[in-house]
Length: 90
Image: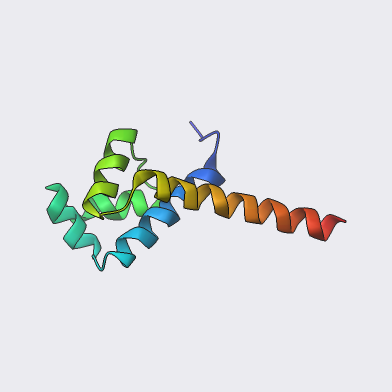
């Protein structure tokens, strides 16, 4: 079944990846902290696997990132894109 919000989810994942890199962590570092294989991180970062809300919060905590900030970054990217789209259509 296809996602109802593929663009929004991609933006969320991009925000999580940015938070991981800002924390100076590799996929392997994060996976170890989660007690999961590196492929777990790779799969959600590539979109092959989706995160549930509890996983999202736990990952944010391990990255020392506020989950609301990570989510806000994804929403802000969407708003910026919509604003650019409006400007080019005017």
